[in-house]
Length: 152
Image (cartoon, rainbow, N blue to C red; front, side, top):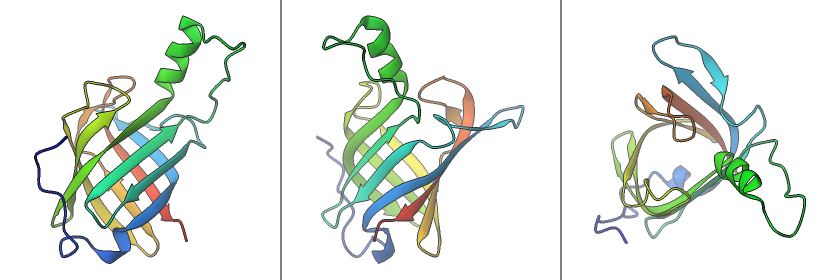
């Protein structure tokens, strides 16, 4: 568990609270500037920010293949791992920066880490953007931008 003090109701923009569904996720590779969809053009993802300062994030690629049998093969498990991201923890906010303090993750290298995002609202959408850093699936130096729509 994180020792970081989570966000309080006073810190959190009221619009941020609740569940958001992914609209788009784009990766901009550096230094080329090439833009691509992360995990396909129609990935499924949700992020939730709770009033108690906790958050959860889950993202699955669009073309995940169901295992052929009851027992997942090593190749199937590797493919499923590469097409899923997920973590949970607390969050803090300072200005237009939100930091996810990861307590649990699909990838143990993220457990205990801080995932920093810039955020901006546009109506009932919010965009979360990373700083230049390695893509968590492919390791490519990039900036990732995820646009979320509020679930009503």
